[in-house]
Image (cartoon, one colour):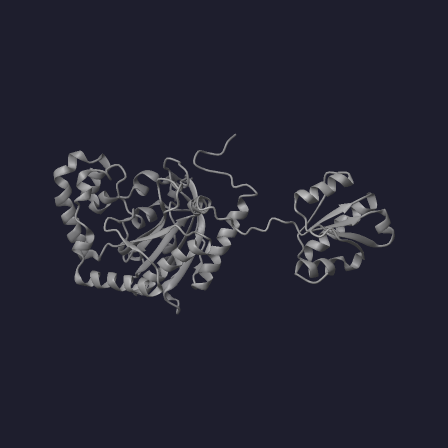
Amino acid sequence: MRAPRGTQDILPGTSEKWQYVEQQLTEICRRYNYKEIRTPIFEHTELFQRGVGDSTDIVQKEMYTFEDRGGRSVTLRPEGTASTVRSFVQNKLFGLPNQPTKLFYIGPMFRYERPQQGRLRQFVQFGIEALGSNDPAVDAEVMALAINSYQELGLRSLSLVLNSLGDQESREAHKNALVKHFSPHREELCSDCQVRLDQNPLRVLDCKKDKDHPSMETAPAILDYLNEKSQSYFEKVKGHLDRMGIDYVIDANLVRGLDYYNHTAFEIMSKAEGFGAITTLSGGGRYNGLVEDVGGPETSGIGFAMSIERLLMALEAEGVELPLESALDCYVVALGDKAEDESVRLTYQLRKAGVQVEKDYLQRKPKGQFKSADRMNAKYVVVLGDREMENNAVSIKDMTTGDQKELPLEEVINYLQERLAGGKQ
């Protein structure tokens, strides 16, 4: 038996990297005052049809949708924003006194697409959502959190790419210009883009198949159709980024792949050599109509999401070594039946006291137990033998210095706690 295509096992040795990254992201969210939310892995299919958009590739081609035993259509979540907004509405978080509501999530998402490096059918996504504020400073804060997350984990070859999709009036003017521009080339475009031209012309600009079509280079840019209000909003966002010293590049063709975006849209790219053809690490934007689409009051929002898999790929491409703790605190070596029995008790007591401990469970001889301690990079080895048992004592060896001493059994816990905490010998 093998894991399904597009999934992976994350084994010990690698899972520690995931844990470290997730802990760092959680800590960054704490500093920015974003609180964790955990939503179901599956939702009613209608949520994504309404929240993500019927014309998106996600809804049309990539969702894992099935009927449950009650005949209800449910879908494994393909992204985190719709579920977060649904929970925001259902639980009336908009009524809480502290606004905007600032949330983050980390969890598995599911999309049926061709598996490739860094893009799996089950993948883990970290994302944040700030709901309830129209302040351009919130847009800048979200982008700052995103770029800071990568920088604090050690990435340097980064590029923040920014665009404005404008308000509804601006988008409508741009949409009409796109239809007029692409209609003479309709038959030259892929079948998906022919449909998009009728349903959501903006998404033609995001097509991977037609990206090299000559009409793409001369397509109308959204920035040329921003009304005064949208232009002012965009200038304020850029101004905040400038004041924070965050570099960015304007790309008028950046549209993102979901229907609910308006005003600010952004992506963070990796410029690292050898990262791969697909350089996008994360992306997000503002979505001023999504809460209403899922039954809530008029509420603006902005967020972004990143793939943990692609983050780890970028760290590898830049040669970033995460500061993982791989050494074991203590290994208990038992020599003899009485010592073996006592080692079970001592191991338990040490663990209760906060010490990371392992012992032999394969009836190895002393030499084999010491080899096991070496393989686990044990900082200390506690030896229980017949002589030690007679004296109600243990022998402790510092594996870094090679120093060895005998201690009364009842002093072992305090001795290790002090030294592991940096106490003097």
